[in-house]
Every structure is written in C-alpha cells, then in structure tokens.
Length: 52
Image (cartoon, rainbow, N blue to C red; front, side, top):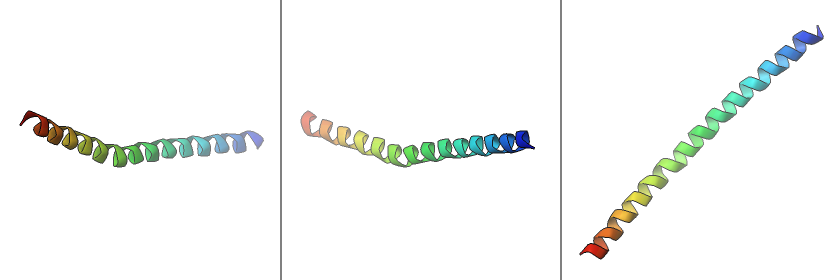
C-alpha cells in the first residue's frame, strides 16, 4: 500500500512540474514577444533619426 501512495505522489509531483514549466514558457512569451517588438521598432526609428 505504501508503494502505491509513493507512486501516486511522484505522478502528482511530475504533473505539477510539467504544468509549472508550461506556465513559465507562456509567461515568458507574453512578456518577451512585445518586448522584442518594442526593441525592434525603437532601433528602426533610431536608425531613421541618424540616417536622415
């Protein structure tokens, strides 16, 4: 009986870890995509200022 509880606990921990990894990846995407876009637009506009 103890082995079943241990297996169940390991399965729950692994599932939680996978969910945590997915939520971190989604969070970085939600922050990183607009950040990258803003950086590219800033560099484009700065290049226009200095190139004439």
